Image (cartoon, rainbow, N blue to C red):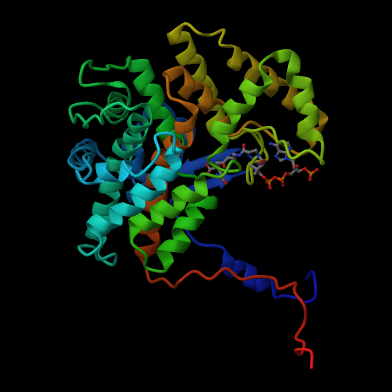
Length: 388
Ligand code: SDX
């Protein structure tokens, strides 16, 4: 071992957790949910069906899917008093700060009626969270622009309903085109779960103490916010806008390679994937579809993104380190094209990932468990006496 103390490699194995929800092969760029490849789910499934799969381990039949969707629709409103929380925030508060607070505050509405050892109670928590995240997310956006909150309309599909709450007003209905609604649903689906990433591990660890699931999800939102994790999609757009023109790309590539410069190429690299992130490939195809539908194929940011990707895939520094575009690289361009402000990008990621977090939380509580206690490698001073 390293440092002052040796350690038993065996303890490392206790640090890993068992799960049957998602499988990733970083070398081969494989992502499976319940054994189904993400590419096939993106092509043939939708977000709510994938939510069912993540929660139950099997795809629903038509009847099971219809029941699942109708239960979610019965939970889309939040308690009317939740709207008072928003008034405590400045209008320009980052929406992730509001989401951490409001999702955690859901505990206050459901705390005493909840037995986390009861599988049905846990399932109801999942339904409430899947259903309410879009409503709370849209409330964050409406609050930031001074428009009234829009109530969910349950005759709409999940992604359509979210876009209605984001862009509809009491004066004018918003009806997204099927291509935009499908692109939104696909973004939700592609971000749904990703094994033991930083935020999911946070939720599992918080859940292991027996904490209220809404508080656990709030801890996941907080962990996701970082630019190295879910905050990367917002950081990608900021980076592309900072680059501004293809002519400036070489300068940013050099900065990304400079060990003295903290700048990283946002949307590239991954803790696990040492190959193309399979979600990035689907995201790229969706991006092309959306921009073509909107007639903005020549969107300058997309041209910069594609040129960046091409250079990074050829440049020795990136090739050597197996730094490929990840899930965040193209999602921001799609979200911007749909009209969603960059400040809301990580909120969209949190909305999407809630099913992953709550599925892992549920899995943890579905079998005998113990509080999590990550081990450490102590590298501090040896025992010594206080000076006489
Ligand atoms: C997500 O875990 C998950 O599954 C996360 C996620 C999910 O769905 O939950 O997939 C979502 O978080 C995707 C990642 C989004 N983050 C970004 O796009 C931010 C930019 N990426 C980097 O910060 C970085 O790649 C990480 C944080 C994603 C991964 O960090 P690692 O694995 O610790 O990478 P590393 O530090 O081991 O990198 C190895 C080398 C280093 O250089 P050397 O020290 O060997 O010389 O590659 C370099 C790094 O400096 N490097 C980069 C780089 N990423 C790594 N250099 C330039 N630009 C980058 N983006």
